[in-house]
Image (tube, rainbow, N blue to C red):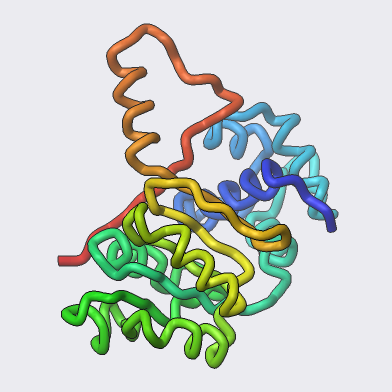
Length: 223
């Protein structure tokens, strides 16, 4: 199934809202209810859900459990993904905590850092290894997704190592853009840039376009 990045992004948001925030006592949801939660039109929600091959009942809407199953089937395809966090500082540790048990098909099984105070220990339930073992463990543990939380000066060099080791997708939190070969998936989140945008709109009368929303990232650091 070929889905655009925008559709996949919206399906991910629908799933998160239905699994984590939708009232548990409600077994059905209407398209206009879901649309109100994500500030979209009901017609846009219906078009997105049509991609799943699942259609609601006019009188009741969509059965929540069944809708989540269909979204899971499309987004995850039942495949387990092993994930590594590269850079186990404050941000990396917060992400490990945030993502723990959040998706059954996404498992953070390793972290890497060149700080001897962090490597060779378990952080938030994840073994942290020295950078020297990156290639060995990425291949040996069949890790195909990496979350990059290193300083900007090291981001491209580390990304190149990850790709050579067999990584097929990178979520980049480093404050600089990186370049990857064709065929390697890349998502980039510059937290500082998003925060500056929010600050800008708090001091002007302008409002951000509804067509291009800032990426929402919720982190919970563990002390």
